Length: 517
Ligand code: ATP
Image (tube, rainbow, N blue to C red; front, top):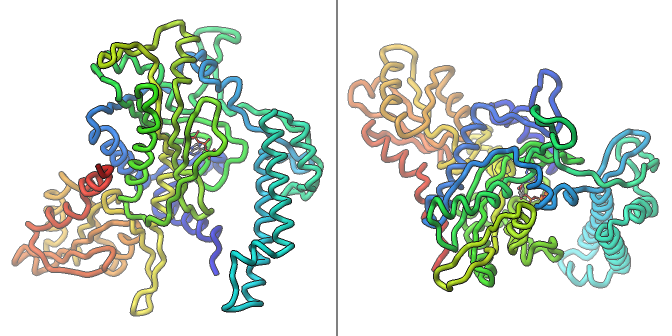
């Protein structure tokens, strides 16, 4: 049976073969955790961005978008807490020279214990057959109960040591648990150190420490420092939101799992400024809206779940992740956070500038509270790609690989193919493309048999293929084939725009997103 890792490998291979994602600077053997989007990947990425931007900005009259610089005055990152606290605990194995996140090593150890319990359950299932009651088995089996206690104790110790920043205790825990380096198999560990995840560089115009600037680790701060500029120039009234799509950089210690965790990635964030005390209402609104946005795409409602944060960051009063069932299991795709007035207060203090809003309705000045939605574009890309990738066995026993990408997001909307390369068919196909390309991204394809061409379009997720044959020259009709049903229909060229338009329209998704009531 294909494992989840095999599935991810297949997706990575497919993404490279068809021009979605390439390893960065591959001719030099690549740079770890950095990827380039190819000709089809860029189209898919742009379509995801468009769907997000339209749903967040165009569909909300009180939300506007900006595009702030990646570099910011470095005090920004003092104020936001990133200089002092944007750290991960790292540990090196002295034999393999490999670097790990200490907390991840411990979490992986816990995962192994959980897997032992799952195996115990499998054994129970085999032994008891139909009468097996998993819940009861988990609640009574002594081996399982012992391991559950063990997990609880490890989690409690890890949480306490990390909260107290007691890195010696973290190392002791790793040693006590007998965790070995997966590469060298040795327990020869260095001490645990805090590692700041921000990349820094230097400004050319100044020397010394003051020249140090950072590549932004999140896009949010560009919005916070501009919130009054936008409010005043856009005559915005609270509640209002500012959205942005842009690059962020994090020097991740453990960067793997393809584009899920990269050192350079893209975020789509929206900060929503509200009256203090009204944040929970908006927090609930945005949780629901964002979940609807995902589900409208039709990747499968069971692929998403909320994970409410029990332990909150010091500035948050509520936080939840939308997790997606990636090939590696359920993982964070998006975060929705109620950040209170923490960031704006900090910027007021560090900049000495008033960042208050005068609320004419209640005749009061205050620092607004903020509810944010923050999604990784690359993770969204992986979610779409992974859930669209299907290897199918057809009725006639043949195989096809199809990317069932939601049509509104597909790189190409239609491929137009002349049956043969002669008799004026290529010219007719190009004439049809000339009519369609104003609305849709079209591909012309004349190489190989029609069957092979259909397979190629299936593999890149093109919703429609249109074939031009000799009859087309006589009566201006073509065959249009649907990627998903594989059904073919003879239609007039004049109908193509409508048929394609209906299926690939983003409108339907945007209408579905709206939160009921
Ligand atoms: P994680 O716990 O997975 O590291 P995070 O909680 O640090 O993520 P946030 O700071 O909340 O992430 O960032 C918001 C979103 O940005 C995440 O939900 C994720 O989609 C995306 N993101 C964060 N780090 C990365 C990364 N290294 N590569 C790709 N996307 C990322």
